[in-house]
Image (cartoon, rainbow, N blue to C red):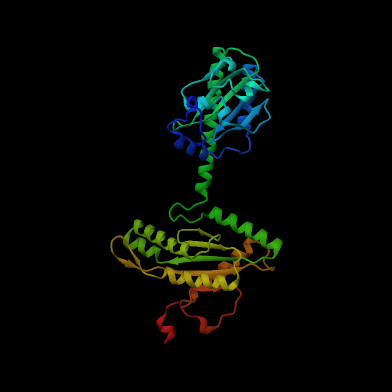
Length: 356
């Protein structure tokens, strides 16, 4: 945090306040319509040449919208609304900046544009943290009427509501991308990743591989030990899958007991290796909270992109066909679409009888 003069000390809650500011993902971002409109209304209400909506980070006041000033940010030491943030309990009106000991040395006051008047209302979020301000600046000394003060306070409330709505929408979007039970990607994220990889592969010819996974045994756990035990088993199986999927690949839960993996840059040998590891990891015994030991198995269908695959639907169809074949291969437990298999290779990993 920058060193401030004694009369510009940072508030005690500054670390918490900065976390709140960054949670809005706003500094140095693209201005939005509601903030542009707020700045224009503020300038019109005061008849002032300059108005802004801004958030305060560690060192800078970032303009999210502004009228009459061609800057993206101000250094924190020169930002009048710093005082709004230090004491976010009401409006700050400075009728003559030249007479205010806090700001009369500011470059904005002593040099162009030679500012003389400032009025600002803090933007306080739902948790009571001040994140920025709505402000107006003028090149002439003046007072602020009661109506202007009320309007400025109302505009800060509009910005508060807009920030809350934006934050909630972003949070919902993030939640939609994650399966709440297992922590793996959601079907939405899986579909997006698959579409991106397909488009990339069709442009560049670079291969990738799709794996569809179907678990066997979760329903039996649910029937025998209850829904909580089944959920715990799903979380444990998901954790095992996560440990084996490569960084950058997408593991998603597609249904109650179904998962998918978009394996970027996945050659055939790498996909087969992953399928083998998945089968071995999932089949390891599960110990429930009750102390009971249960077992889960998995079937894996694999399909690789090639220049004969014309769509995501076609690739999914290939993987589904391979998954059906895998269900028939009780020893191997996985199948690769379009490949002829060596009967000698049809062994379940760790199957002692196959080695006999």
